[in-house]
Image (tube, rainbow, N blue to C red; front, side, top):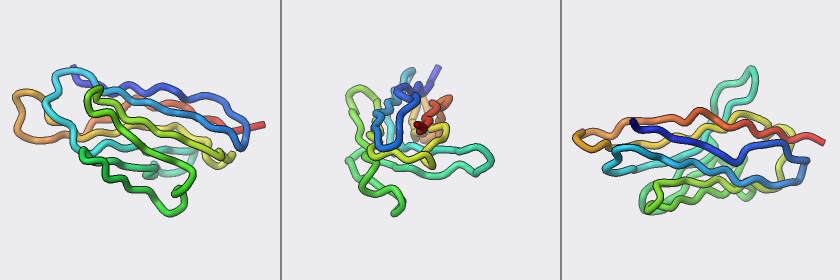
Length: 121
């Protein structure tokens, strides 16, 4: 069964850092774009960062410079390094990946269960 499992969330003080990880497992033939999204209480889910299989990255302007996305294709894992965290970064962070399962001819989007990031003193 294909799944994405996030880890690395937690409670951090303002100005601190966290490194989130998301590992895809199962019958995977290929993964194209991987990304991170977040959702704060009462707000819609928003894009944090994406990275393609060739390493091309994309960030919203509001997060450029503080967050860095990377991936290890051999491990089917994507990372999000978050620095200079602010209370407004508090949210559930979700991993997303476009996966081509073995035996399939189309990529399908998969989501992780989410990991809570809380920025508070």
